[in-house]
Image 1 (tube, rainbow, N blue to C red):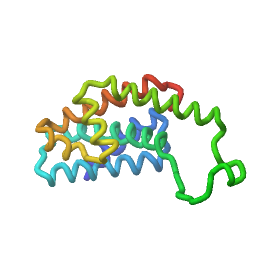
Image 2 (image 1 turned 90 degrees about the vertical axis):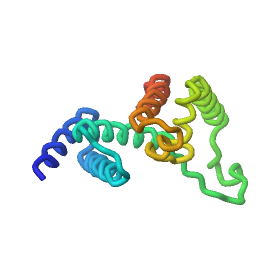
Image 3 (image 1 turned 30 degrees about the horizontal axis):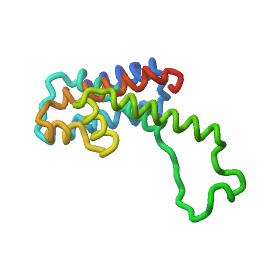
Image 4 (image 1 turned 120 degrees about the vertical axis):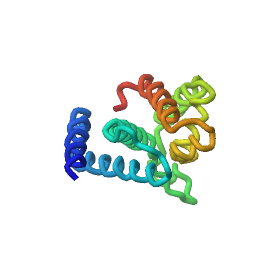
Length: 162
């Protein structure tokens, strides 16, 4: 139990340096320990628990930030959005959104075919790293590296959106 406390303190410090609030850090750290347990239950071996947890925490943190930016709530309605009293986006907002979508699409298209494939399987098809690794016959570590490359390419292009 002592090593859990030690790892948890280190992970909290790591996330605090990245500006994560205490309660959000708790959730990310708990998810990281859960992922490590699930990985071991699926037959994976963790040779360095601290390194595994740090990488998992950083990936979960990056994924949560990316998902928060990408989440859009869309309510289905039979009404014309323009007739709903100005709820439709302004024309300049539509143009900006379309431009952003073109930029992201171009960035994804510019990735290597393997990185693009892994990125789309994870973020669009919601496959886990383990599922992708099994499907493609490569290690989970390789999947993590491809996802990190993809995220780096996207975040470098949009530095002001953090």
